[in-house]
Length: 396
Length: 140
Ligand SMILES: Cc1ncc(COP(=O)(O)O)c(C=O)c1O
Ligand SMILES: [Zn+2]
Image (cartoon, rainbow over all chains, first blue to last red; front, side, top):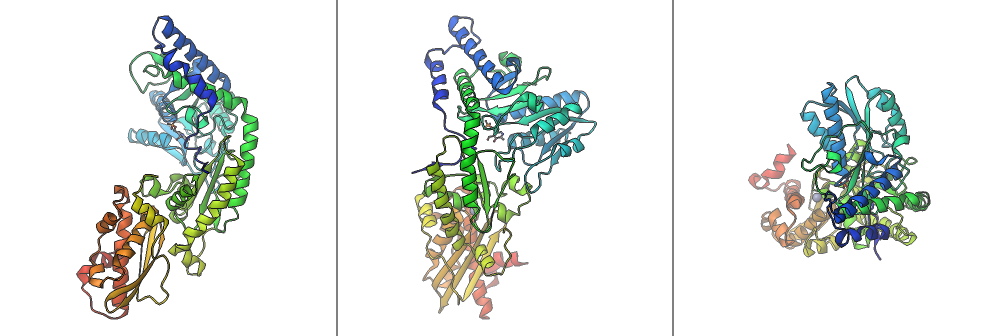
């Protein structure tokens, strides 16, 4: 038996999304810019998908721009706001220290171009408050960009409150909702978001397709020059099949949101309760404001990659913020942001669930993980020193 | 996962010589706090020959596999031969490591050098400082 616990990385596609895509490969394969019937049928489908997505987000269709995914949407949102700000002489941006790299690396680029960026600390719990955002806003702030939910540790940010602060202070507000959409309620009106990013493959849609929502009046800068697709804001022949898959997956997720949240949260809490029994471990991320599908622990005395490899042998497919896994030497910036020393940050494990996760998978994880942690600790020199009292334990 | 060769996975899954030697003649611990790999080697030495060796490792798959392979390569060997072990030889014996994982195999080579140096120093034996230049340098 294998158990897939890496839904924050990507999800399996749902039947509804697959079936929604199929006709657009060899039946309605026209270019949506073509004037003939084949092209116009594709165009109609595209606009239908746009209306579906808009309805699910509380937006209007003219505010939906299809992109190649979450990363592109994040890049475009931030670079557009920077352009708007620059024209008014405003070159300050506020974000959090634990954003996705699609946001952080875009901001780094802007810093090189003379923008200043405030990275709000996220504290031990891994969250920020609207008050902290408010306090960081300056005369020259042109954008606040905070994620709706964190991809590693699952914290859900007070996005509606942050949106209200931004609106009151007349600062553009973007939220990276890639991990939130399809998993918790997301409504651009309630969040008062001016821009929002989402990605289909995180909610059982296809990979390589996403959306940038931009409120009417927010002038987007195109990242890709060429044809006049997406009302001149994103050139390139539309990925019609992908977009149909995205819309169908979003519709499905929205229709079953409440029941899925309830089921997944129950499984999540069973995992958290079980793994909390492992001594010298800690649950990372906000314990209450938390994605239904996120479980994230650090286990003292062991390293994340070897944990993942042994779990994979036992049929558990999970992920970790471990440095040796990603190829860089530093552990996850998210775990460092919540104040873990390197040693603890290296021993991390993320289990991310979806509505396809079963009770059997959870039971397998609860059986296997404590054994694997124990096995690795038994060969760890750090663990020995701690158990022999030569070094202090860092986690209770 | 195809990240590693079969050999690496074998040594990772079934590491040889894991454990401690309570009355070791030489102990060497090296660690790269940033990377998150720490390795400790225990040696039992009889007449300049490594009669027994054990290791403990906190680290990634290639760190554990490198430790295991390195201990196999020096077990029963004279100290002079063990001192010639390079991380490249460890990696080759494992049928290769991904380029960004080579630094994990360096630890095995260094831990062995350090354990042998510890043996010489504890027993007041003469040694050639040049051979230990790398590990002596780090101590400064
Ligand atoms: C929070 C967050 N933002 C952005 C992205 C990037 O999305 P995509 O993979 O569609 O480019 C991801 C997914 O990796 C994510 O989790
Ligand atoms: Zn390593």
